[in-house]
Image (cartoon, one colour):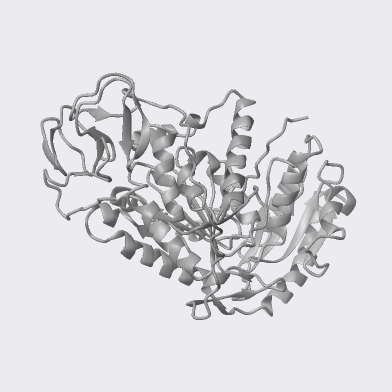
Length: 512
């Protein structure tokens, strides 16, 4: 990126030129028609009003010509575009790209875990992982048990917990029955299993109705990482109905709380953090401010042997070649491309397209199509080698930067990252997302100062300072890294203080 931003907006810096190869610049502030701009070698007069975050053409662009941002293609001109014109969905078309992939010639070493890493205070678990929180979870095996699970958790509202017990939380959802046995049930079980055995969970109840497809016996049998003193299974039918189930669950949870009270935070190296990287309500500033800053934090963590995990497969389309180039070896690069091909087949079953991903809010924020969105989204993953690629909700075990196959839909993506073992999540947003998770702290990073000021109750970090010329990408990245350690040690995020507890598993099959 060129990204030379001064503090006060002038004709010379009211738009941001990201790469010398670019055909467009991004308006840093609202640019009135008639404004004269100096952008690198280009001298441009705006012929339209250009909203903040939107693109202005730096020169005349012919019909069918490829348009570049970040130095990469973001589509073709649907009609002639004049220098100074607003470039957006009305004149920029999406086109699926056919990339030439550069695979690594030799294996890149797996990062060593630093002996001198900074530390945080967390809950050491028997399997070697470290929790950043200490919850009792009540997980519904199916929608039929969701109401009772919520009732159990609500019955503890207002109760004073020991200082080192974060509370009792429910995991209601709409799945677990009406499924065909096979990949869909397997994925749900992997998701719920990851939630039950999460390092941020001291103990849990798996609660069923009793007759659903997703039977609780699956989680209680041999071959699972659950000890009987940390997991209890019960059904509403077998416990005598809803009220009797609530009372029975409360007795088990009282025992769990006594055990959790004995668990204390101890010092742990930063590489024990598995950091989920997600974005939602993105805008055009996402790829300029918050995502590169989070990418800097990601690189810092990966260099220590920690594990940042990028997700959202539909939001790497058009930028996947950048990840393949960083793969640890050809096998990992091919694994990523296989996930993309599988996702494309999944979309084709429903006559969908990757370009269906940008939401109306994304487009209002200046993102014209998925290619442009993806090029900004992958910046969350920094520049470190991509060590491995994981299926949705698969437990992440590798040190270093990794990728997980998830949808772009935020609550489903976060649920997959959580089930994979992420004990902390960093979430960038331009339009202003308020999402959280029942057992995992979610750090919110605003991409622009306007959103940060409007939603200070929801935002933990203002990366808009970068576009304002107040701070650098590296400085905001360091702030995120330092905050990550504080939050891992117990500091509450805005989403936690507001009580956000969104949980939505990914259903991939038909309703039976």
